[in-house]
Image (cartoon, rainbow, N blue to C red; front, side, top):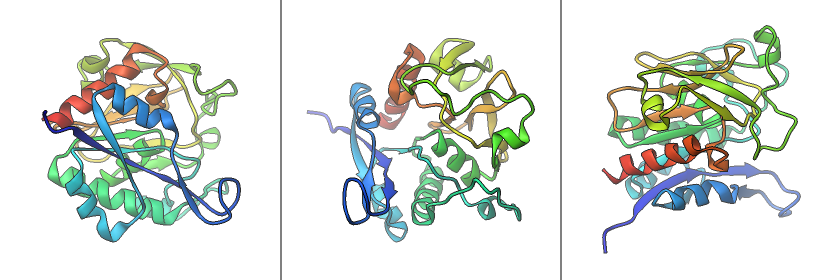
Length: 238
């Protein structure tokens, strides 16, 4: 039997309340299910920044998941901090550490929603701190309908890696974010954009796999969503 393709997924963290009276980790099942259906074996990564290298040695590919929090603006050089910004500093420290190590080792990386924002910061980019205040006539990027339904379309750049993976120039996506990529890091390509101009996808050419999407393809609301996971796991298989 061939060795399984091990995919590491970053966890979210919560303070006491709800599930436990003590701090706890969390992840939606569909992140793991999407990896399994694409041929990978998911393992979950707790927030231990000092052990990021050891965790990276265990995995073939890294998924940086989303969450209802923000990257500290100081980490991308901003001296201002919008009132809506909330952070999870230990989670971000771990995600930045393991993402930078994965990039240095050229291991496949997929950033999803907030994970795309984290990936962009790791690659030297900056973020829009609050879309309604920075984007004129912005769409409802925190869509009112359920997350397993589309909220808007995105246009995919012809000739991009994302275009090759999805095989389409437009795709309907779900949307659950108030921040977005503002400027990309050196060598990073914008590969998907919403009708209001908000950046919805980034990629780094020349790597085994380095892709960020602002939506949540783990809900698999369209064939392109499934194709993203298949392409990522295939790259991690080597």
